[in-house]
Length: 351
Image (tube, rainbow, N blue to C red; front, side, top):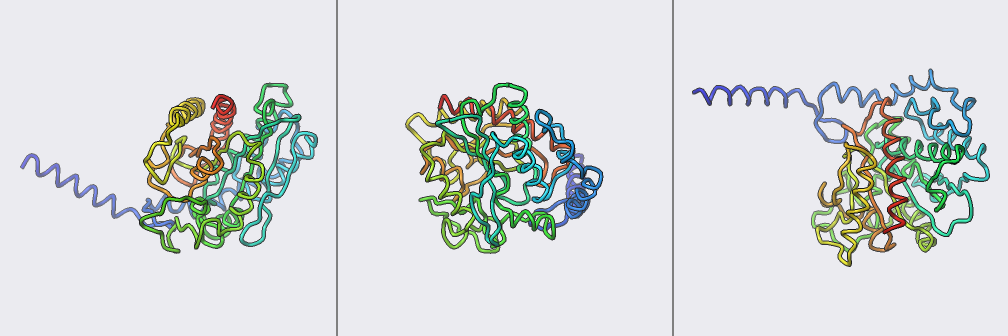
């Protein structure tokens, strides 16, 4: 009996806790408080905009990372307003160009930092998954911080590489997260853009169109991935490495995601060294893992990059507790990616 009562109490407590959870829009079970915070997140940040709206006037080289812009998560219009202002103030360094087109015909913008004639470049993209706002904010913060370092005459990866960033790949989906469905993952065509990259390995349990990980009717079926593929493959000889930024596992993920097989040819050791350098630089919230350790995933950018570009390609999962993060974490998360990015640039040179 002395064992039965505690076990019964534990079971009842678990039952009570489970009963308090409700299914949220992405199918996961969360507390009512968490679900309410998710539903209110866009409005919470719009309210933040009212007190931190006039960020453009105060922007100045060397002080971009301290801008009030980073106090709120921002709409795509505000993000591009911020970055376009940085490009205007650093016209010899930061340039903007269209890298692809969305399902709805929207332009997908890329920004390149170039401080001189560089033979090699690094490529970074974020927000293949629309709901992962902190991935995008961290990429924007990293751009701002690099420009600050250039202005303050500090060493930067731009001393060795041209730096290409695509802050919002899934722009249609991102707009959906602000208007109607905060946890929208897929693009407006309801395809998971991080399952739309070619892999020779067949998924034994193909997701249905209604599933969050639906890869589309075929690999590269989506305009977003087609444009980025074409841009990258045409310039792969100049790219030294690739980063894909997500949230919220707190991991630096190594290929592969679709097989547990080793890469071979000494690549596993090289990747482990590179990944460990990033996770160490990013802080104690980060670990280095193989992508498949989260779960087997087919058609991911990272695997395509390693197999077909034959360049070091990593996934960074920004640390957090959920896809919705407090605005108070924007700067700290941005600093984590900034440190990881510098470690990546340094490590790629030795890869």
